[in-house]
Image (cartoon, rainbow, N blue to C red):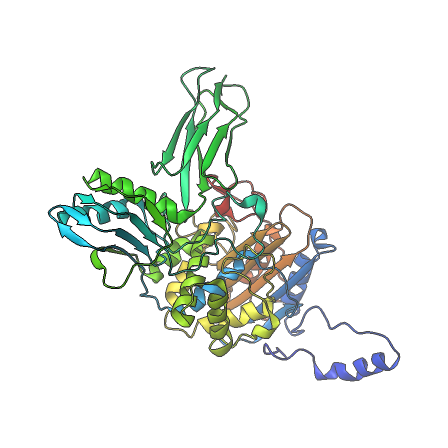
Amino acid sequence: MRRPFNRRTHLSLWPLLAALLATGLSYSAPATSAPDDDALTQALDNILADSRLNGGLASVTVADAASGETLYERAPDVRLMPASNTKLPTSAAAMAVLGPDYTWDTDVLATGKRSGGTLEGDLYLRGTGDPTLLAEDLDALAQKVAAEGITRVSGRLVADDTRFDAVRLGDSWAADDESAYYEPQISALTLNADTDYDNGNVVIETSPGKQAGDAAAVKMTPANRYVKVVNRAKTVGKDEPSTLGVERNHGTNTIVVSGNIPQKADTDKQWIAVWEPTGYAASVFRDKLAAHGIKVAGGTRLGEAVPDGADKLATHGSMSLARVLTPFMKLSNNGHAEVLAKTMGYEAEKSGSWGAGLKAIGGWLKGDAGVDTGTLRQADGSGLSRKNNVPSGQFAKLLHHAQQEPWFKEWYDALPVACNSDRMVGGTLRSRMCGTPAAGNVHAKTGSLTGASALSGYVTAADGKKLIFSVVLNNYLASSVKDIEDKIAVVLASYREGAETIKEPSLTRKAAPPADLECAWQKPRSC
């Protein structure tokens, strides 16, 4: 008999358990369940017997998507680090708490009086958390201010990011990733370099010079005066190795480009997180104002709220949350996850903090989704924190409940799709499970940190049955265990209820697997 999520032990085991306890011995429950699905149990057990998991941990749950009945489980209650599978509860809660149509406004406001073309007061740029703001959006705001007839601001340019608190980095985030684009500082006023929408980043492009010995050519996008680039990179012969390095100095916005780049090498493109993103957005906006003939006489002030009675001059509205889900989930965008967490905190608790946001997420998980929040710990929105602990059984509960929500289709469509080469469809699964029944079938969220890997989502079996699965693997020493997750997904895609055997699949990838990080975090590689 298949078991529902909440039953843990067959009644027939209790006499054995009692006997073992009476003798002072301990008893471990079976690793798997559902003996009437012997072929599925055997196939998944064989995959999880991979020697790379020796000494490691695996929490795996497979269920019928319609009924929620458990088809297979291994340690479904064991809490493990889920890495970016943490984005599943964050994104689902955001759709429920904020709603698919939720948007963020970026406003320009003014204090003081007008005297001809002069604003005798301060100009404010107020952010509310837009995770998709681009330099071109700031340019459009500057153009609207110019259309008001303002040519000079006698006071300051003030950047209001007070919708969120001033805590920029999440709990236990890695210090050595502080300048990495996938670990951005979180602010209610931030800027993206391109339409991947990586918050608080600039793009540094380095190309070889015309001949060996020349300095490398370096370009920064968007062009700005907030970030300083020190170019120490040199062009070397075409057959020499590249030793190019691009790094931001800690606590500064000085980016050093160093090392060698061979002649005729392709342009190297690196995304770098800035220090203090509020100042970055304000600096670019000041430049846009100047480009439209508006001079701000005073300096720039960060983190000051717009006073009551200020006049609104211009507004830019973001894309909807439902649209944000695509770059967020497909590319496993960490900044988006944290913006959503703090936004939920502000809307639900009137506090744009991680604590308030996590309270809102947990409240929805427990109250609506039926997830037992007492069995897990969520420390941030994205999964960067190694304090996150979630068992596969609770992911399965969330996946099962989400199907009942009115926003499910948008959320489901935002999940990466196996072996779809379009980055905004296949996302972090775009090179995985190709040439198998899982290709174009599996919709699932990936997760990767050193020693932690996860894959949770949906798959349609060969007999048409829709299945839910969650695989969380931890404490392995191998460089990658992604193929173990993929084999499980392919077995589920090949599954027919009542089949006598299920063949273990062999897998190929479109490209060599990267190190155990999110595929999208390996920019600019396509993986």
